[in-house]
Image (cartoon, rainbow, N blue to C red; front, side):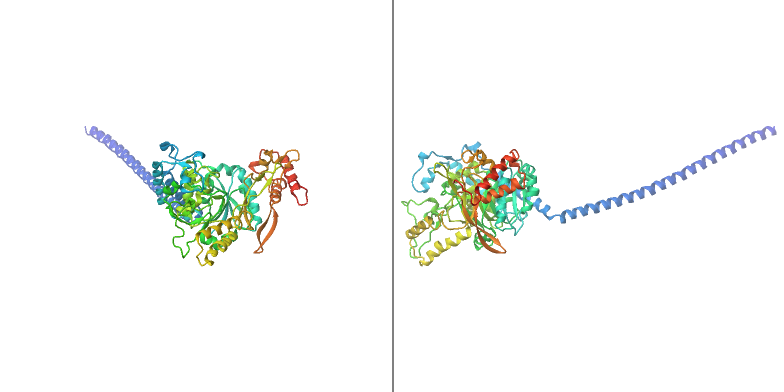
Length: 596
């Protein structure tokens, strides 16, 4: 019995020992597992902390880099920041224009209708005579007046300085296609006057630059010039998909040029006097804007003055033709106008003075005449819709030319219009008919001096008692001699617009091109010589120059000696072109017998 009990106890001991052993083994395994877990956890924590520190360090470095980049963005390129501000400015301006659009044909039909010439009143261009040339309803006048008032009130007084470089002076042209070629010739002539003024060539579209990239990037820099691309400068958001047209290019060019003091020249306008002297003159500093005359007297529709809010005093005369009249000290009513007096409307006080403007050249200060530039841009954007007809009434020369002076009058910003009349170079054909080819405009400084001497000082010397009729007689005599086309006034610029200096165009004109001799039939400028004013060693001097021969030498050197490439000539046979050019140079050279 006892033996059995001992056997059972022994078996229980073995089980307990086995159980203890298993329990110990499991406990040990669990302990090791926990240790392994702690190690892994510690390692992961360590890795995680290290990774977090590394990630934080990278973030800090990245943030430091970002902060640095932001700082650099603010400090790195003031030009880029200025460009951004310029884009915002132009966005604001074009929004004002769009909100006060003048293309209202869908609402009113034709805003202004020019009448048949049979209905025009003859005689002086009085208010009644000008009103007879067109019709415009009172409803249209009222609506245009409302929109014009809003534009004038909303436009800033000055152009933002972010849009130009203060204190700079330069010359501006329009480029693209044939205009790039013409501009190249014009810049060559500009440099021969001795000026070192920088030049900007405005490219209306990006495609103009792409097609003329060699012209922009290589040819222009060697002449101290560069291209300015309109969409890049104004900003795509401001343009908002709008198309720009040729009649808007000049006002756009004035607006976006980086210069404060600007000489704007048409691409076919050859300057022959150093413009530096004008920018340094008391004339420019006094007026800040200089314009030149066209052939015609002004034909601004009288209702424009209602639209623009310009008061015209119909009871007081202010001028005779393009010259001012002075009120004699002994006759306080000498300038008064009665109902029966047939006084030209533009001779009245407050009206825009004669003559109409020829905009092939314009000098202006953006700092003092910024609002004039902005308002003229508005006039040109809606020019074909209404303003061009308001300013021309169907007469010749309709376009941008009168938008600049009218804008200056509205903005009460002064201008000086050259008083000397245009000289018209040209040739007589085989039928003895004269054909004008250009407009030679006179030097503004010489003109201003003569104006002061013969007009302003003449009245002062009379003791300011010269009667108005005597003043008119005096001024009438001056227009026929001292200020006429053939006065001795130095020429400032020759606007070669009919035809332009373009060998391609010449070769297409059978009336002037001799296909057998492969040269022109006539000296288009009839041997015209001029005294070119230049600066040499800081001294002014004049050189007698054969204008036409000089231009052909430039053409020969560019196309046939240097063989420069222009988009305008890409489809023309270079050998044929240069045969014509070389023949023309030989024919025009001094000492050659010519049939003119």
